[in-house]
Image (cartoon, rainbow, N blue to C red):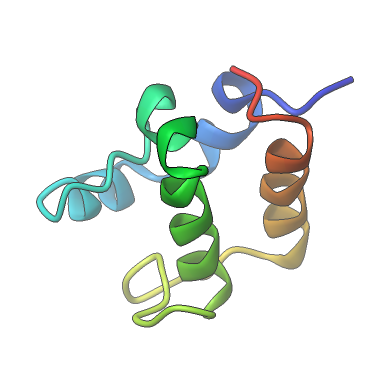
Length: 84
C-alpha cells in the first residue's frame, strides 16, 4: 500500500513546525505545495533535505528532529509517487 500524505506524512509535522515554516513560504500541510510536480518536486525535496540535515538549518527548528523511520516513511511517500 502506498504512503499517503494526508494519513501518514502531514500528521508528522507539528503545528509549531507548520506555523514556523509558513512565513518563508514553505507550506508543510498543503498537499498541492508539497507534491507540486511543476518544479520536479523541488518543494518536497527541499523539505526532505531540511529534515535530514542535508540543508541547514535543520528542520524542525530547535528539534526534536525526525527519526530515521520518519524520514524513511517520507522518502517512501516520494518513491510512491507523492500520493495524496
